[in-house]
Amino acid sequence: MFLLERPDQTLRAFFLPVISQHVGYDGSAPPGAMEAAEAAAGALAEAAAGSVLDPIGDEAVVARLRGLPWSFGPEEVCEFLESVGTKVQPEAVTMLHNAAGEAFVVLEAEAQMKEVMLANKRQVGKRYVEVFSSTPAEKHAACERNRATMKEDAGYRGVLRMRGLPYTATVDDVVQFFNYPAELSPANVHLLQRADGRASGDAYVIFDTEEAAKQALGLDKQKLGSRWVDLFQSSKGEFYALTSTGGVMMTAAANGAGSGALGEGYFVVKLRGLPWNATEDAIKKFLSPVAAPAGGIHIINGNTGRPSGIAYVELSSEEDQAAVLKKDKQNIGGRYIDIFTCSQSELQARGSSTRPRLLLKMCCILSLVSEGVANLIDDGASCEWCLVCRFRARCRAAAVTRSL
Image (cartoon, rainbow, N blue to C red; front, top):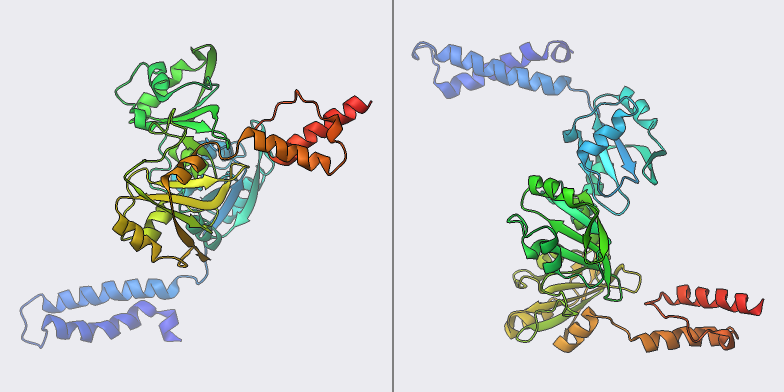
């Protein structure tokens, strides 16, 4: 009972004789030895008493936000919360940069949670943000699951997102649009593609400095070719989130080539059964100690643009290929991975448009035949890279229109 009431005095009495032995105090030691022992014992006692008196289970107060725009960083989150009267520092905000637009905010007191909850369902642009009460454990678990986008430089803001590019735009066209700045390397221009391998008209451009990116924003609404281009400030976190959730990139190496494959001279293996959130870093760790050359890992997306669980890896030698094949049936994230050898031609065919348009159209027609409406198909209907059901729905709508 006395220990709980006066832990500092009791612990000091406990530590003093122990420390005295180690500093050599035996009654004839040099002056100051006992003082040193007492000071050390007092410091230890104070620290130990503090740990005894610390309340158990006093966890930090954490709020979770969902639905934030991908372009949001800690500063924007702070401004959003300030609109409901809650002031937090950017250091208290952890951005996940994931597709759900999530972030965790560590609050100073429980009273702030009530204020933060006032922001629940508030509009930010065309989106509304949901706010939930959370815990440090949930925050930690989410960060562990989301390591792909929790990179150290995820908060870097020297990134611009471009929208409205001509479909024929190349990396050099983009660099020329920004007047060939010294802070922009062609390797840092990432043109986006749709799932069919065609350009989407969007791109991410990563500048060497944030100041250069802000200055480049002055070119917003300028023309590239015949099209007006929109520029938005972004972050590497948004860029990582896009690539880790199935965004398809056409890098400078692949621009105009239809495939980002390194080509002849490299040996290829196919990985099947990957977790949908598998990243290049996770695959590199799985392949270790075999090192894949830069640009040699190709994560394949399905028809919807989401990861298919398949990846191709180009390796520098036949020995590396044999070493990787020995990892067959080992796991990534709890999933067993099948590993096969394959050819460069298969990789390059998969890297470009994977299914011919004629086959897609026949696929749509066959699905309609089974419903007895094939005779109503308009031969002039264009067959985009379809999620078969989407094209079928369009044809069905046309069929209904013609039947009326």
